[in-house]
Amino acid sequence: MRSKLCDMQSCITLSLVSSLKGGPWVLWDDLGAGLRKAAELGFDAVELFTEGPQAGMPNELKNHLNETGLRLAAVGTGAGKVLNGLTLTDENPDIRASAMSFIREMINFGAEYNAPAIIGSMQGVHGGNVSKEQAINWLQKSLVELGEHARTRGVSLIYEPLNRYESNLFNHYLEACDFLDQLPTNGVSLLADLFHMNIEETDIAESIKKGARHLGHVHFADSNRRPMGNGHTNMAPIAKALKEIGYEGCISAEAFAWPDSLTAAQTTIDSYKKYFP
Ligand code: LER
Ligand code: MN
Image 1 (cartoon, rainbow, N blue to C red):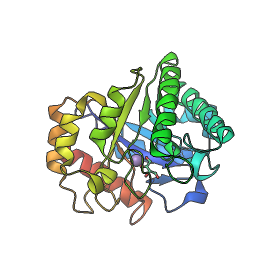
Image 2: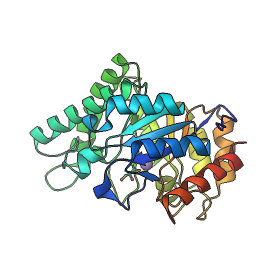
Image 3: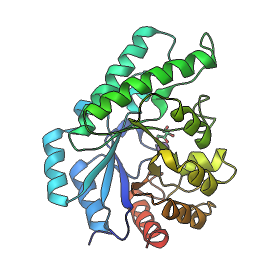
Image 4: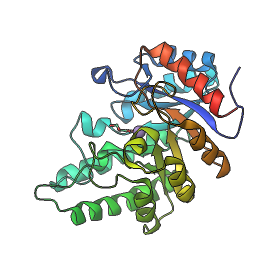
């Protein structure tokens, strides 16, 4: 039975990019088997990580979603950076342009299923010939254009602040909120990744409350990026904050398949039920 216990939805990540084994996704490789497992455990939705927009096997995906009753929660764009070296803040204008078209196509792909695309590592970093001001300016322009594009497709675009070891643009959730306040679009919302926030925030629950206006998606992982329950994150006040602000989006497990994929999926749904009964 599906765990639709509150207005939030339980979600689990599924990566179809086998070459990135060891990365922070819970289910792996086999779309059909992964979705059936997610449904069997009672998840409401799945977040997909694919090589690109063509790699989601659209018809197959549609059929599996129909069969399982799962919703597609979001699509990750990180492969654009990790596999193809594309970022929105690269000094080379051709690479920035390719990053834009990659993300535009990912937005279109997700929008077929009413699912937003997530911009995490594709935001890039500043350094070398690219000043912080320049990188943020490029990021700003890109997010406005892509956010407006997403709106025309009936979805939002999700921007994810990352911890200091992965980006040097926006590491804090509330700084990213201020940045979004300045954007002349309401097509972009923010991702609160509890793993990144555990590294950067003073108080995760407080940041979520203060920045509730932009919250669009949550990545659910413990302090060590293992499934929630395997680290030292104090989840109770974070869950309370999410309930208090009336968050109605996905709580999506982007965590290592630790100690293995199926155990991680089970631990995640158990934690979800514990904190969001
Ligand atoms: C993507 O959601 C993310 O959190 C990044 O850490 C992946 O590198
Ligand atoms: Mn994340």
